[in-house]
Length: 206
Image (cartoon, rainbow, N blue to C red):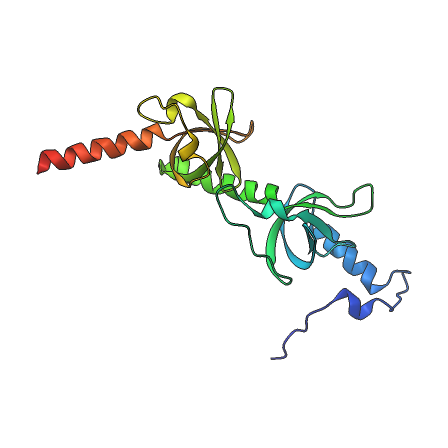
């Protein structure tokens, strides 16, 4: 059986068709038809420019994504290489400068929400990083999705200095999720209470 060859738009950029469109144009239109704004697609890193990653998703122009979008709080900087395949969020097929607007941060958020919903339904714990202080509590990064940690849910006992807990991966329990509103509420206290109860049960058995 003959193997199918990979078709590239560059191979046909000089050919003309009776419709007046080159194969390259048809290739672009076909690619555009498979993509849509607001979707998560796979792209290829084709260049690194200072603090930007140049990503090709098969449209007329590449998108440029700030390298900071590839790094999560409490995690080391991502090592990106030309040729890496990544998932990105398509914000605009063509912005006012004629460029494709892509976001790695929003793609991670979509991926994270889907995964977190499954864990929430099962009642399983999630791993997150406290990275900022806000009114009434703190914000927690759950690998792309941002959750709210009420101050009352930080610990079993009130603590004055949360500094040692910042930017350190640790377990949380999701108390509430609302994807439509983009709200997630988590608790660290619940996890500590379960651990405390578990230890007490072990001592009683001994």
